Length: 352
Image (cartoon, rainbow, N blue to C red; front, top):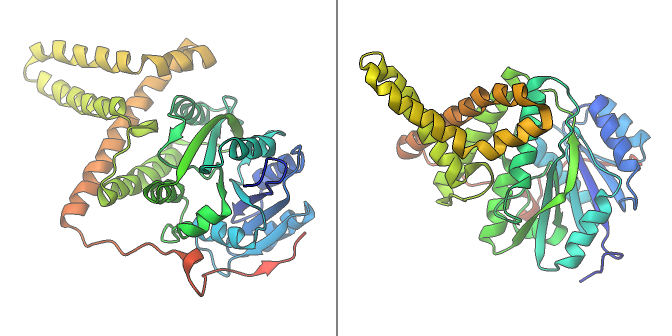
């Protein structure tokens, strides 16, 4: 196994278009010290402006012939990359200057690792409340998660090239940004591969969240497909945002709603609602204390209803997925383009 000085790291950035986020991402990548062995920008759908922007930063540009989502773009980037380690970075994050060094050190220290991933930092770029809440919640969940990880995150995640190829790459059935990285993590663990959460590897998220984008991402792109994956695989991990405490909180939120509804007819039940409120606050106190410390008391108080709403729609998504699992049609088998003799890949343009 190669040492940290011999491990070649290829940074792979999937994108569908050129915007200021991609420009800032590429700029942060060029400032990495030590630099990556190469930077591969996988343009989903061959947007010419994105290709030109990536090429102007000296990146190798690869494209897909049609828009097929980040899974296919990452697979195309992985096929073109020459590094031992494939370091996937979303196009709306900024990496710190020592990111490549941290990736190399993590794999060199643990030759048994197949993959690692990091988290968002605690200084989100967008200043509005929902952007601060959403990104800080992600930071907290990952920073308090188990280092011996049960899944994978491709927003800032690295994997040995041979390990990615061995499990068939990202499943291209996910044609919009979703939880294709989590699904990949499930397959890695099922194959006996080890994944580690490296909490010191942190990137800055540039995304501006609104109520609409947050609900679409959390409910449609994450909670529903993740619930389907849990039911299909039969694996319910006790980590990150689906640990036992989170599941109990979801039950308490629905219990609180039921109790408040019944209290309209039987007001004496309000004491039970108060008990449920106190339980929810107590179970989530470490998180709310984190928000209080980072952004103040008023911010932490504003987080509480959004966080309980998060439990509500997360449990709702699982209920819907369970009904579909019981009564719906069986799902098709995942696509594994990296194991195919005729890989579903796009063009490879010498952009850099």
